[in-house]
Image (cartoon, rainbow, N blue to C red; front, side, top):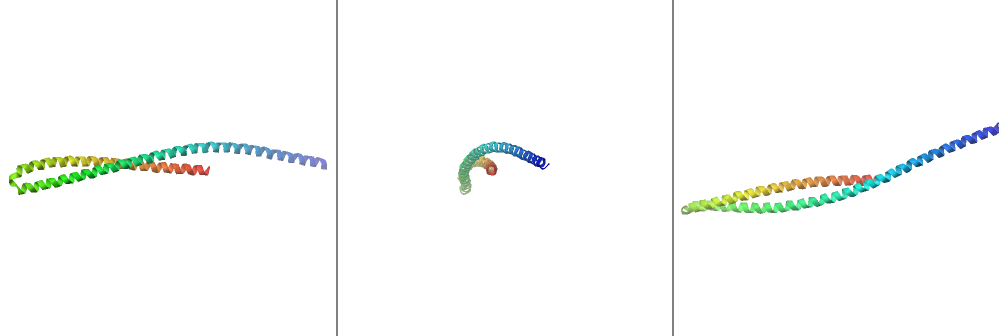
Length: 164
């Protein structure tokens, strides 16, 4: 009876050990599958990180170009304003001269008309350049927003990569 009891206990131990071994094999297979999936995910994340880095560089380049364009437009606007102010001063000088020189009234009116036309053209140019500047600044702001998003995406991808 003791012998049968020992044999039964040994068989039970063998079955338990076999069950544990089967569980370990299944857990190992599951962990290997998870490891393979994690490696594939890491490759995808690295690819996305590389793409985001390239996109970020492109956006930075576009922002720099937009800033350069805005700076150029600002210079043109400043020049147009200077010309406009000069025309305004000339027009005012012509008005004063017409009052002082009654005999030159008709000539002064003609000069004032020409200057007014030039002033209007200068103001129109100034308005056009101002509009271009505003559009350029709006574009630059949009590029800054894209850059911010790209940098945020890049940071998230790097964070996700570091967690992997």
